[in-house]
Length: 243
Image (tube, rainbow, N blue to C red):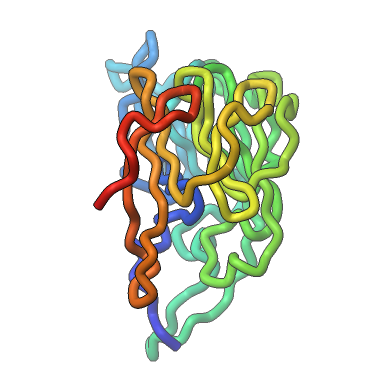
């Protein structure tokens, strides 16, 4: 069986969502919040210390991530590297499938669960909303393509304010979020309505009123080639897609 380099597992199809990976980066990271909260690992569990090294959230989570907008993603279950990708490599490089049983939720800055672990994948909060995924196809698995998955958005109470319906979803930036549905990417507002209809093969987040979008080039030999351009918030091109 062909071995896929692990770095490739971090690439997500659709709108190119790569901002937050549920795979570990380091054991100590500094979130940009009013009070410093640094991730630390103790005895296989993750907690947080302040700038003096004092524990402010006891190590109790199987994995945790830096705080964003007052909440932090936590993982409960078998959240280790091998279970996240869904297999273990044997000595002969044969892939041994592993059941993926972990869930993601959110804690507040006191370390209390604010949103119960109920999602197969979750993104950080941005502009008050967070993209979450339900279904076995959310996992970082080599055979995820044929498994069900849908993305939606929750608010900070855990309420699903935009129902799960998208194939991929990115963070809200400047009031719009890039989502993929039916193989094409577009942009929705915070009510879940399309402000820019799905028509792109790639759609980046808005920044300073503009977003980079991509269309697959008509190259029969290499379907991965894209032409990129820029749109404004009305969906109008300010630069037509080009090589």
